[in-house]
Image (cartoon, rainbow, N blue to C red; front, side, top):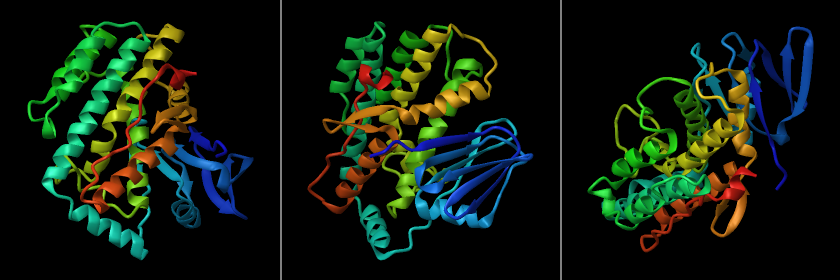
Length: 302
């Protein structure tokens, strides 16, 4: 499958559609980009605006549109409404998923996340690989004893050092948060396109969260963002820089990377689609609990 473009708009622009081309107008300059070669558009300009025709076209074509707020963090995601009968059947299957199945799914998701965290530590020659691998092997149904949280403390200590905390601000957390938001948006977009309801999660179930299912499915993919950020920090020498458009463009390029899933390599957004399609198969088949989860390896960073 041909690699598609992930477009980052950082200055005030007018976005519209004409003859199946995205028209990106900045002052007197107009850029024409064929719609069918676009995977996603991130708009990080507070005074850009869009034509209604473009928004409808992006939804029909399955193109992710992410809009950032005045703090330059993603806050809005364009989701399609799946109105065909297959989508309705998929939603019914999701709603009928039993708690026991959800417990098994969450167990497998946490295992995959811990294994990928261990893989990151191994790739970069960091400590605690065996500890995380051992934790992954001991995850219970529904992760009842919260191996995920215990593993996270060890993992971030080994990766970013003792002074790092996810709840703090700073350059590294800005990098991670922006990267997570991009991947979460892709996952939510794929979930909606399959006719599933993003609000109804496997483990996450906050009534204040419209993306509970996306927050479930992102977990094995978070270490890919971590690895991409860690690789950048190692190669750039930056530790406490001002988070700006250069870093955002770099993070958006994560979708140009390939991911190992089910023994094959796919571009990241295609791997996400493989995961969501496998989840849909679980919802439809009561005897099937096999989720396709990504595996982080050193080839991801090539």
